[in-house]
Image 1 (tube, rainbow, N blue to C red):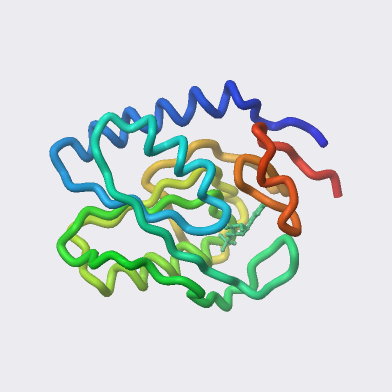
Image 2 (cartoon, helix red, strand yellow; image 1 turned 135 degrees about the vertical axis):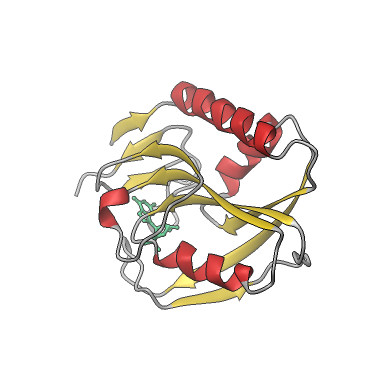
Length: 169
Ligand code: 5GP
């Protein structure tokens, strides 16, 4: 497996993102919503690097597709438990690829009328979009290669890796 981003590079970038987010949400009551399972490692690092308080919640989405690509048919298997109406919500996800998962989830949350709703993704495969989607905060832009580690899996394996690695097809 080829290392794409080392732990040191990831740590530095997470600190940078947290600085920007801390500035943007200064004085606000931030609720960070992680999408399981992939986002849990990134989110744990991100919220600890913030210099503002936050609360957390989680949703779990399933998209029944192939092992390496979402089908576009997305199902909420665990919803968040927080009332978000009038609140400031930051959704955290591991990676945006086709954009289908996040655009579905954001549309769903928007209907609940949060005051603000933004998205932070660790990785962005911009060239693969099937629907238009722009995250507000992006860790790294990457090419169309299948990556694992730092929470990202292949068949539930490799989530524990400290580096982000590319699986050779
Ligand atoms: P989207 O709905 O944007 O196509 O895809 C989002 C989901 O596809 C991610 O949450 C992730 O589960 C999966 N995915 C897309 N690209 C990759 C990748 O390179 N590696 C891994 N592990 N998952 C990916």
